[in-house]
Image (cartoon, rainbow, N blue to C red; front, side):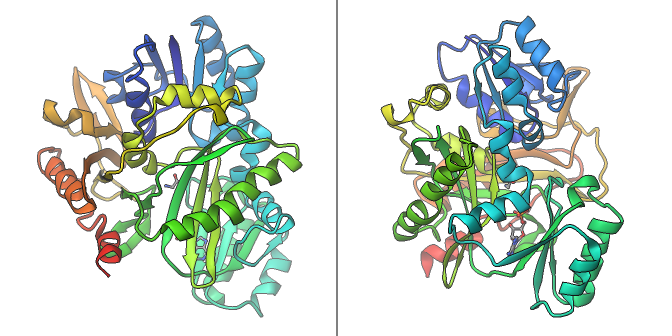
Amino acid sequence: MKILVVGGGGREHAVIKKLRENPDVSEIYALPGNGGIARDAVCVPEIKATDIDGVVKFAVENKIEYAVVTPDDPLVLGAVDALTAHGVPCFGPSKAAAQIEGSKVFAKDLMKKYGIPTAEYKTFDNEKDALSYLESAPYPTVVKADGLALGKGVIIAQNKEEARAAVIGIMRDKKFGASGDRIVIEEFLTGPEVSVLSFTDGKTLIPMVSSMDHKRAKDNDEGLNTGGMGCIAPNPFYTPEIARECVRKIFIPTVAALNSEGRTFKGCLYFGLMITPKGPRVIEYNCRFGDPETQVVLPLLKTDLLTVMRAVTDERLSEIKVEFEKKCSACVIMASAGYPEKYEKGFEISIPEDIEKDVFVAGAAQKDGKLVTSGGRVLGVCAKGETLREALTKAYENVSRISFENAYFRRDIGKKALGAKEE
Ligand code: AMP
Ligand code: GLY
């Protein structure tokens, strides 16, 4: 079977390695893929994930039998609708359903309408009203650009001045382009964060193992926000009791709400949750697998991934059993020093062969037959273990065996989770 994966980061590498485990998979193409993915799939660097016409043309010409679309932007642009219309069955939500990530105003209004617990909020489509609201808003307050903003559209403002600067940056200076035509200003919540990815075909929802991302660049959650510096699974703050509450009050109502709005969601629905003193609240939805959550969650999946994905597409998810190993999993991101700001690239990467299976490549290119750094986040270095401590020890051992110039990684991935376990 010929498979196409749209995207080219560590998450896509994890998806591709998992799909490869199915013996019926003959070829996997990645658009655009990357230098590391090229070891596991045929990469087509000329076709960007957001080039929907190019993706469709490639899929049709190459007789792709199944496509998996994982990044947010092609999903929000309607890649799945376009591929499906050309007879290519796909894993991923339609453009209408992807709005749950594509517009924060849409997501917040959906939660309000259907009573799904989230932070209190107001939405604004003009700067004047937003600035006038800030005069009497409670602080800290959270300012969010409506549309996709490369994960940078959320500003936690400690006081009125910071909030004003955020609003002006987003709405007047258009720091995130049209994504800032509207904004959400919401209540600041506190508590541990949990990511839960789920498979859903619009009728059945199967949560995957929970996880914890580490978004800040430096140890002890200091420094700038990044695309994720590491991850662990399962998340110890997500107790069985909280999980039951989330299924009942958040997961099932979200699937039902999208159905009621005529936007049935099929694919991976991601719940970004905060476990507040008042109970779990939705911080954000994503219409796709998380990065780097996927790099810790998929290695624990026992059921064949392609079988699950096809069951989602065919709306047969209730007919299959999706099982995860009862182990723990950890991922440490090796980044280029300076990320998420300025960094150098082009350094040769050496990965011992025996640990290649545990390494998902995010930002690397092939140059003269060698793997070289080409992005801020370079590698997701992972491991599994019977305990979280064992998984972390092994992941850090793997990190110590990989080298490239200017490599930077956090040394405290999983520390908070270990603390929770030992409390
Ligand atoms: P998002 O891009 O929506 O995931 O937001 C990025 C990060 O901002 C989240 O992971 C949280 O750490 C933080 N955040 C977002 N919304 C809130 C909120 N209402 N209260 C506190 N922190 C928040
Ligand atoms: N790890 C957060 C995200 O994928 O958006």
